[in-house]
Length: 105
Image (cartoon, rainbow, N blue to C red):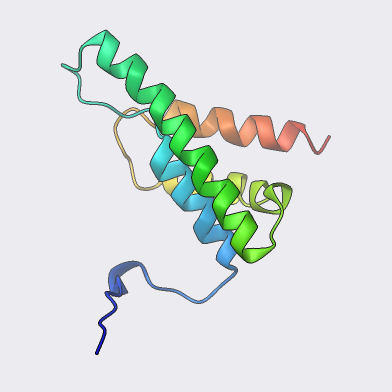
């Protein structure tokens, strides 16, 4: 026997690349507690970027997806994430949206 945990609270049916993009944002988000020492914040930022890159690379390897296809979802998922009102993320998310949309101009 084996068991699988399912997060029904956030379950939905849709393009799996949107879920990958959301996971990328969750991993790499800049939010840190206010009293976090600067050095911890800097190290955390570097580690988050590295973990996100490894996660994306492995997902693409397993699924055969392209990073560019995942990036197409960033503006949509970032806009949805703004509604979650996570402290410290709004400006970062808006910047991501602007960056991705400007690539299409």
